[in-house]
Amino acid sequence: MKNLDAIKNAKAKFAQNLKTAIDSKDEAKMTEALNAYADSIQQSIIEVAQEIGETADNTILAKRGFRQLTSAEQKFYNNFVTAAKSADVKQALTGLDVTIPQTILDTVLEDITNNHPLLDAIGIENTYGSVKAIFATDTKQLAAWGALNSKITQELAGTIQEKDFSTSKVSAFVPVPKDILDLGATYIDAYVRRILADALAYALEDGFINGDGNGKPIGMLKDPEGAVKAGAYTEKTATKLTSLDIKSYMDVVAKLAKGKGGKTNNITSVDLIVNPVDYLTKIIPATTVLATDGSFKNNLFPFPTNVYPSEMVTEGTAVIGQLSRYKACLSTGKEGKLDYSDQYQFLEDNRVYLVKAYATGFSLHTNDFVKLDISALNPAEIKVTLNQAATA
Image (cartoon, rainbow, N blue to C red; front, top):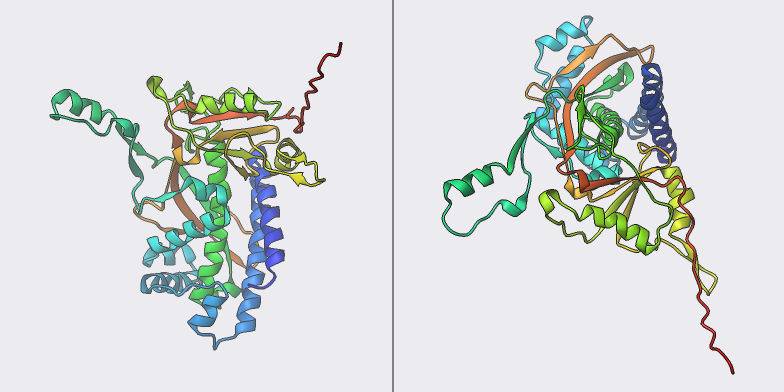
């Protein structure tokens, strides 16, 4: 699309404004943030449509980032346009088949993971309408030699759990201007997917990191095995880290190796999530040294580490663990309906629609992730020891 730099800047500003709104629980600021971002996406799509014109074929559209829709998707958007142009939108949506095809959620998830490395590393699963997930709590116990007697059967049954996330709902408001409706299904799809992908991505990222489990995911900063008060899980106690020297860092990594029930985990690398400001002002100085040839050597961790900057982590705080051990699921539910909302009006010529998704995220054990206090993290130092031989 045109104006890629402008869209990138708008997206970055959207993330910052949304984080501020979430922290302050200010719905007006959330509305304002989404309003500004939706307007930038709308303008970019309209510009492309005007540039390409009505003669564009699927090949040209594909090169510009637009998808070829399936028959179910085409039907969905056609029905949506019919309802959106109706005088009574809410009634029109009720009377039409506007169930969101699961393939749209698939592409939204693909867009999310392509543009959000942290969520890509977590690996969100589309549960295709189901709001329940079945998972193994300990894969080490899922095999046994010899006869499968009642005792072993009972032990294996204890390692399989079901997670119901029907009460963990994330909603996204999509303001669709009439100008977009007039462009047709392909352009509507690009607009809706872009808004959904980024709105859901930042909400999911915040939930997976900070969620307290009360109608939200159980975030990495919460203790999944700790006390639960009024449905909310308690915050983990931070481990203070003032240096990334090998002793201090490996003491933290060693905590991740302590599994449940005295078992140990094989740790070959770790993932570190930090605020973008801390990444620039604390992590880079702590992992960069000046070499003897005058060049800087960076990313010098004492243990293999992948760093993920995220606006959803508070400055001075970091999370370390293995993202593969965090379970995350997303679903539109069985109905998967698109609803009209008259609660918000972002732009004068808009109609606003509500997309509800059900999501969950959780780690299985307390030690899967460690909360760090890096507010006093020191820059890297090269220590030189001088050994001087005694002379007679």
